[in-house]
Image (cartoon, rainbow, N blue to C red; front, side, top):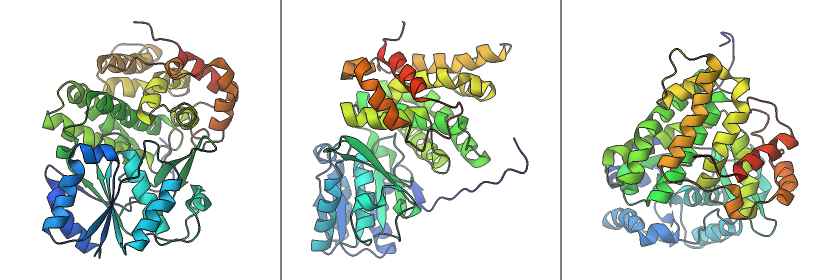
Length: 391
């Protein structure tokens, strides 16, 4: 590592983490000056009873609140205007987001638009938001996106069939309230997909060209937790230790990529998710080993470390052989947690690849990828992800 390298690490979000942490919500709301709360969540969080646990703490503390549940997977950009109108009409001054990445990204964007002019489309890109929004408390119920601490809201424009990202330090929640107990009822297939999203965050941040000492340390610890806990969380969902460590892994993996961005898996995930409706965590799981195989030669040392963190015995192996164990470890993890889908299973075909790759090349994740990639390279990665992996 270059001793004179200049880097910046910033985390505007405070973090409260621990079993039962949700009980402190009213105090945190009041501490941020909140008097009337907009609770943003999706219908699944309501049906699972998690939203009621959150609302009950507000109700018992005599804090008035309004529910906004018009949140879809890959939230539509029009929901931001609707949620903002609800918040303003009801006199809300603080947002509590409850759920996975879709709910939290929606809550963050609504918070921005409660205090900033125009339309959320005006702020697509990086650092275009002029000022802070209303305070947001983010309560994750999945262990994957890390949206509770990131600068990003990823939204979908259904009419254009594209995903749009808003990135700004003003988009960071004021508080990430992380209670592992809220993840205990997460179904196995969602646990698996979101866990692979967290792993993709950690791996891509760790090996990309924008990596820095703080983000590297966070990414390494996240990979270690995921290796030790994801399988258990999938097959024994009530195991609180595994849920605790997976929520922590998701959190710190997001803290790792916040200043570094990611890589080709995430560059491709946005157009593939928008065009074919593939859940974000799942499309990353499908792409990750193929992207790693492509990137391998660009940083064999780093990939050897990834292999070691994922439980592979690399002592005594040649550097290339040790690095290749990282790809094998990810393939085996996917198999163990039941992820066997390919891009073909979602309707992706050869005739789609030009448009997908062209859109992915516009992503800010491409320049920081450890290996320089062309549009043809991205198409080749997609072709590999369209094939069933050898068993």
